Image (cartoon, rainbow, N blue to C red; front, side, top):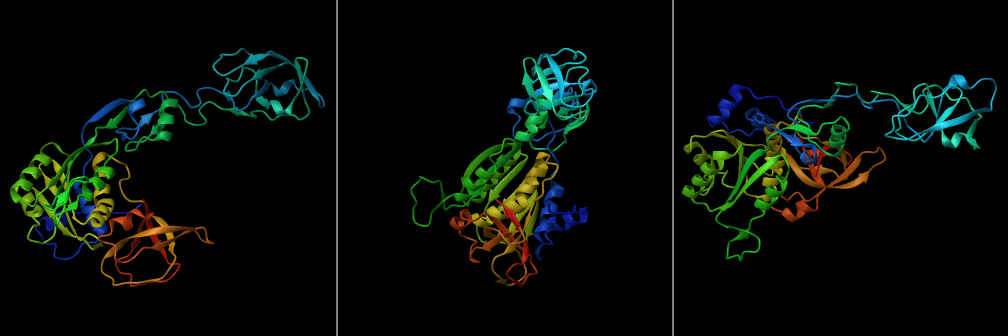
Amino acid sequence: MTDTPKPTDRDLADCDAGAASALLSWQDAQAIGLGLAHPVSGMDHVPLATATGRVTADATRSPVPLPPFDNSAMDGFALRTADLIGPPPWSLPVAGRVAAGEAGTPLPPGTCLRILTGAAVPEGADCIVMQEHVTRLDGTILLETRPAPGLNIRRQAEDLPKGGVVLPKGRVIGPREAAVLAASGWARVPVHRRVRVALFCSGSELRDPGDPLAPGQIWNSNRYLLAAALASPWIDLHDMGAVPDNPAKLAATLVAAARDADMVISTGGMADGDEDHMPRLLRDAGGQVDALRVAIKPGKPVGLGRLGDALYVGLPGNPVAAFVTWTCLGAPILRALAGFAEPGLTFDRVRLSDGLDRRPGRSEFRPAQLLGPGADGLDRVRLMTASFSARIALLAQADGLALIPAEATTLPEGALIDFLPF
């Protein structure tokens, strides 16, 4: 997990004043964005059946111990070890049967009870002998080996005591989380409300797939890239499509997007070109903009700021740069906004399959392919071509992003680096 310190008020003020001619590291840029993000207010109590993918808004505790009673871990026979008197073999009559879901009866002295997996251990029994370890003869069992007390018994509360934390605050509910919530009786779960996200792409050249293309036009990949990245149950997405490079239309879209959103995401218009309007429009609308120049490849111009109650993330227009900057900067900020306990990035350590020479200065998130583990058990990765910033098809062939440190000039074959899997 990346360790990104919280920015100071001075950090935020300096960036907002435009003192950003120098490049920020991607870690510092992420820290500034995380400093702007505060978990959304509001809590929903949703049925467990519809809670998958939501983020817990409070710690949940178990009203019962898990397991709630001593129960059998095996199909077999419940008995009292003190009834095994003298040398083996021992013979015990079978006095009855207990299955899962039955209350059962106390174990009569000098007998055993047939018991099935999950059934409550009868009062008086102190072990369960597997059915494979006995010989059954006309209503009795024969044992050759003395069992130890406690054998094959799942003890009450050995998994979780009554009042124990089932899930902490800020946890995404998946299959494992749903299972323990169900086992502890949570029919409705306290979760953060969905984060409202508004998305639009700037660019007069953009058309949706399926539309005919005039000369100079392209199909809008950023819209579908980000819509897919934002397709999570904890997100309420308002996709506003593409907006031409017209300042009035962009300004109107920006203001409308921020009116009801917790986060506004735009692509394009963040650099210094004639049609790069977004930082100015955000300021003109009364917003705070940190026009960050980030030491990251691809994707140097990134905007982080706020308009009204909405947090703003302005991404580059290049699709690969938009993907990288969203993955490394925007997504952690959104997770923090949604109340994730750990919103940052989690890297794997891998080894390079081939050496690398490069010019230092910017951290590089290069598409890479996994080649499988080497002799030391660590995965090896092959870096894809160095010329990748506009190659969206190449990105689709990768298994993740290899992080090359900003200061690195030469990395030998076998060098350890960080890898962010997709």
